[in-house]
Amino acid sequence: MKKTLRTLLVSTGLILAHPALAQWTTQSIPLHGGWNALFLEVQPEPSSCEAVFAGLPVESAWAFNRKHEPVQFIQDPANLAPGNPDWLTWMPTNAPAASAVNLFALEARRAYLVKLPANAGSINWNIKGRPVLKPIEWLQGSLNLVGFPVAPSGGPSFQTFFATSAAHAGQPIFRLTPQGQWVKVTQPDSTFLAPGEAYWVGCAAPSTFTGPLSVSTGFRTGLAYGSGQVELNLKLKNSSSNPRAFSITKFTSAPPPAGQPPLAGPVPLAYFQMNLTNQLYGWQSLPSTLEKFDVPPGQEWELRLEVLRNQMAPSPNAQAEYQSLLEVADDAGSRWLVPVTAYGLAGAPAPNGAGGGNGGGGFQAASVADPHAGLWAGMATIDKVSQPAHPTTPLVPTPTDSQAQFRILVHVNEQGQPRLLQKVIQMWKNGTTKPDPMDPGKQVVDVPGRYVLLTDEALTANYSGAALIDGQPVGKRLSSAAFAFKQPIAMAGTFGVGAITCPVPLDYNDVLNPFKHAFHPDHNNLDERFEGTLPEGIEAFTVQRQVEMEFQAQDPNGFQLPGWGDTQLGGKYREVITGIHKSPIHIEGTFRLQRASRVGKLNDQD
Image (tube, rainbow, N blue to C red; front, side):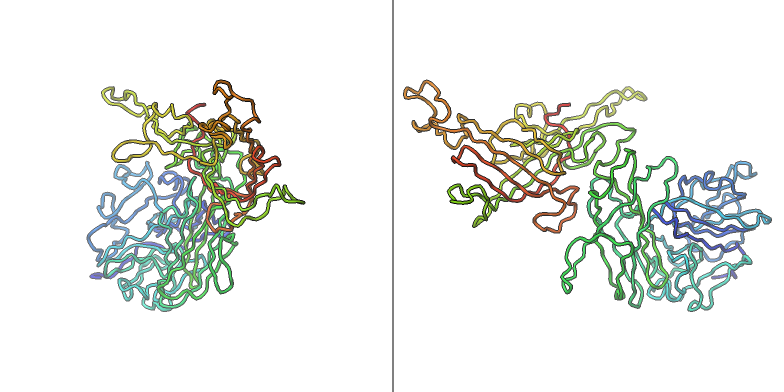
C-alpha cells in the first residue's frame, strides 16, 4: 500500500432470508444513498443491468476489471469515470455518459459498486436468482475486491477465516464503515465477516482459497442431474486448522422467474451411508438436515448423492423441472448454497417441443411419451424349480442346488407397450442436410443422425454401424439363448408396475424344438418315407412358456446400486412350462433389468 486508502462507499449487509432459500431464491440487499458495495450470492435472472436495476434510482454501477496489474491503492469514487480501463461501467440510458457503458449484465459471486443519489434514503433491493459454485479468481501481489460465503447471521473472524491460507494470512484487509470510509482491519481476531459484504483483501501468492469450508460438485451449476444422471458427489473440505462440524440442510425452491423451466417439485435425494460399526450400509433418504461432527483439519466429507426419480410425482407440465437447494454450513459461520436440479422419469423436454431419436450413448427424451420407453437388458436368475414327480406338491417350486441364469431383453415403445425380444441390433441412421438459407453454398443439418434398434436383420443393410471394429462400422447385437422366437412378443401389463406377462410358444415342428432332431428318424416329424409331416404328438410336442415378471419397489438381490426404480428395475421372475412333461413345470427366481437405450421405436417404425 503506497497511499492511504480513502473514502469510497457505504458498506451494506446482504441477507438471504431462510424461507426463500431454494434453487431459485431472492437476495435482499439494503441500499443507501451514495455509494454501495455489493457482493452478489446469486445469479440474477434476468441478468441484464437494465432488468436488474429496473425501478431503482441507480446512477451508475461498477465492476472492477483489472486482470494483471496489482492494485496499489483504492480509487476515490469521485475520480471514477466511464472509460477507465480498470472498471466496467453501467449507467441509465438517459445519463450523459451512457455511450461509454460496457457493463451489461451482473454475475453471481462478484463484487460491484452501485451509486444512488445522496438523498435516496434506504431502499431494499430484491434480486431473484440462483446460486452458483464459482471460485474466487485471485490476483497475487494485489488487493482484490471480493466477498465470501458466510452465514446470514455472520461469519467467522478475519483471522480465523484466513488462518490456514499462506497467501492471505496477515495480508491487509479493508472494509467500509457506515460513514463510507475504507478502514483497515486492525483487529482481525475480533472483526467478523458479514454476508454479502465486499472487502479489499490482499493476496501475497497464487491462491484458490475460498474459505475454511470449501464445497465442490465438479460443476458450477451445483448438483445438476439433468435427465440421465443418477449419482453425483458433493465434497466438503475442512480447510481450517480446527475440527469442524458440517451440516447439509434441504430447502424447496421459490417459483422460477418467467422464461425458466417451471417448478415440478423438490428433488428427492438419497445418500450412501457406510457405517460398519453400526452395521449401516446402503442408500438412505437424505433427511431435512444431515450433520457430521469433528471433521479433522484438511479432511473431506464426501457424499454420494442419488436422485430418486421413482419418487418424483409426474408433473402436468411437460416443461417442468424438479428444483431445490442444499445449504452447506460449518459451525464457524461459513455457508454455501448448492443448487439441485433434475428431470423426472419422462426426461427433459425437447427444445421448442421438437421430437427426436436418441441412442444408448446419449439422452434425448423429447419424443418419449412413456417414462420407461427404450431397451431394457438384464438377467433372470432361476433358483427354484418344481418337481413333477413329487408325490404331494408337484407344482410347487423348490430350491435348487445351484442357480441358472439367462439374458432377458424387453423393449418399451413410446406408448408404454412392452415387448419381449430374442435379439436386438443397434445401428446408426445418418442425418440429412439442406442448403443454408443464409448461404446457399453451405449445408446445414436438416435432420440429425440417430441410433435405431432393429429386430429384423434384413433391415441392417439400410443403416450404418453403431460402433467401429477394426475401422469398420458394425452394429451392436444383444441376444438371449434362452428363447427361440423370431418376432417380438407383446406383453400384457404396465412395464415397471405390477407384473407383465406373455406366452412364448415353440411349435412342435420348429427346428429349435427340443424334441425334434433333423437327422433322427424317430424325432424328425416326418413319415416313414420322409415325405409328409406328422401331426403334433407323434414325435414332438409344442412347448409353451408363460413368462411373468413382477416388479418390486426394492432390489430383490439387496444390491446397493443407485438408480433403482429409475435406470434399474427388477423383481420376481416366474415361468410355467408345458409340453416338456405331462405336468406343468413351474420355475421361480429374480430378474434385473437396466436401461440400455432410450430409443422408443423398433425397426425405425412409427
